[in-house]
Every structure is written in C-alpha cells, then in structure tokens.
Image (tube, rainbow, N blue to C red; front, side, top):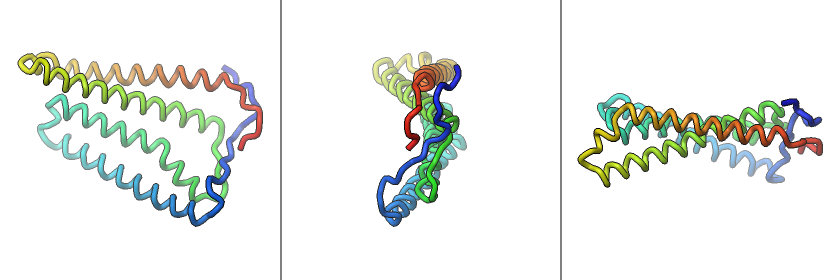
Amino acid sequence: MENQNNVTEFVFVRLWGNKQIELLFFFLFLLCYLAILMGNFIILLTITCSHLIQQPMYYFLCHLSLMDLCYTSTVVPRLIRDLAAARKNISYKNCMTQLFTAHLLAGVEIFILVSMAFDRYVAIVKPLQYMVIMNRQRCNMLIIVAWVVGFWHSVALLLMVLSLPFCGPNQ
C-alpha cells in the first residue's frame, strides 16, 4: 500500500506554554517509568526464580508483567524525550511503527488478562478438574492466541490508518 500523503513527519506543539511545567512532567514521567520498570522486573525475577512459574496463574502473571514492560517501553520513553527536547517531532514511519507496536502489545496484554480471568473462572467453578483443564499446553495455547489476536488487531488498525490521507499541516 503506497503512502498517498505529503506528510513525512509530525511536529508536536507544546502542551503547556511553560518550559518549567514540561520539565516537571519530564521528571514525573521518568520516575513513574522507572517505578514501572523496577516493579515489573521484580515480579518477573520473583516468579521465574521460584517454583511458582509452574502454576497457571503465575505463568500468566509473568507474561502479563513482560507485556507491561514492553508496552510501556514503546510509548513512555518517547514521551519523556519529547518533554525534554526543544524540537518535538516524529517521522511518519516511526509514528506508524509506534502505533502498530503499541496496539499489538496492548492487545496481547488484554487477552492475557482474559486468559487470567478464564484461569480463575476454572479454578472457582471446576476446582477438581482445574489441573486437567489448565495444563501447560492449554496455557501456552492461550498465550499464542493472545499474540495472534493482538497481531491481527494491530494489522487491521494499521491498514485503516495507512489508508487515511495526511495532507494538512503536520502540527
């Protein structure tokens, strides 16, 4: 699909007229991002270094934590950089890549949450058959389905956005 527009980059205008407020938000988002990184790394490390990874709930939690790390890392570092930079711009291709990646990882994260809900449903409704129903093969299948559905959601969204004409001002 050929890009039929004349916009090669997007320029972000200031959200606030005050540079001090932008620097305040820079530090606030940086602290939040570092807290998210540290919290998710601790969760991943704790689960993978223990026997808990064998249980479906913790297996899904480990994948959810990894998706949260990846998802946050697609958007927040760029936001932090743009808050500190004098020129705030992103190329058309980088914008579309970030859009695709953010929707892919968010979609996977949502379907992992659905898988976790299914896991808890089975644990409550069918406690005696829980280990038979929620075996490792089924858990892996649910993770793969999350990736496939997330991927197709992102492809569909990207194709719709790529068909839009971007010919006006790039600000």
